[in-house]
Image (tube, rainbow, N blue to C red):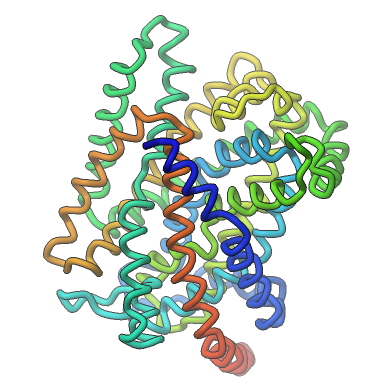
Length: 452
């Protein structure tokens, strides 16, 4: 079964999907007049709460939406995903992650603007947002089959199996093995069940509790991780410029990849960027669609900060740590263990414990937010009265992730992410003229507002 999952994932992440994600995103970048660069300053003001409207419809504030989205994106994709990218595609894959991130900022702007423009109501009459509602409300009922495809893939693809797998590995390597307490598969089961109970306490409280916990955890986890990273980079400052140049050089030579195929480096970079910042996959529009705002463009501007923070900043720092410590050429491809080696070498004695805490918080915060995504997909397909059943299914799969091999887990998630990307990107491209019209209107009104 495992080899079929891996084969399907490799097949679907071929040229068509690469063209859809990067080509579609590049179209949005140009069509919007390079909105990620033009709108960055205004987006920062919005995140600061300058334009918050407490009377607007929605469940959570824009800052909470961004925190929840970042909790899902600034996570193990930045620790394990970057290591996997370097392990399988060489340092050059990081360059293509950068390109995908800038393109992804435009994609997120469009998809999250649409998530507010075309909100729908679930069977209980509650306002909901996300690609499935954008398709149904914006494109019409005849396109509903795309919404169904998105939700079916979302229910299975947005499970926390990868996070559970990697957290289990770190706990075993850092905490249990040195004390002789790692008993193999039985230990995996115990860790899996413990994680399941911790996640249950938060996710059974709904989006408000998830957003509240995420908005408190995210600043802490990012600060903690950054401190460790900056100390390692400061100790190896002289090597940083060479490593940055090596990333750029390898992106066009593919020397570090078996067979030296540049195309493979690009695919690896795009694949890991999609897993890391989720631009074009359709997850962020679901949480941004719950924002308390009546300004679609404003929400889109906030959302586009996600790929910048996630990939351009955090992923680059992780990549540099792996490279300056020299562990990247070790041949280790089990994502988190490669990053663990880098922290251990860069900060002997304490590095592995800093990474352990970061992985613990990264993994748990991502698990909290992913449950909300899958819950929304289940709600759309089966109704609000049955949606809570999904949480129990989700919790059980945390244990499954803890006891399964990384390669199968990663390929399973990748394959379903790819399926979700098709409805998300097609709807965003189809409705892009609506976004451009709303953007022009929004900035025209903001100029008037700022003068008052």
